[in-house]
Length: 68
Image (cartoon, rainbow, N blue to C red):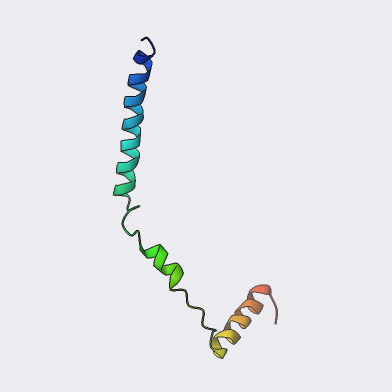
């Protein structure tokens, strides 16, 4: 019986903390878009880059590496 004096307030505090965490996640937009990330994986663009983009990317990499 004495353990209830500890467990009941502890459970109330735990429920309060879980409620605060849930409220924060809703207010910060964690549940705004649940389907978007899943569709972004499926809609990945696997087409090769056009030749001018490939050449520009190669030049950018050379410039970043310090090459001439």
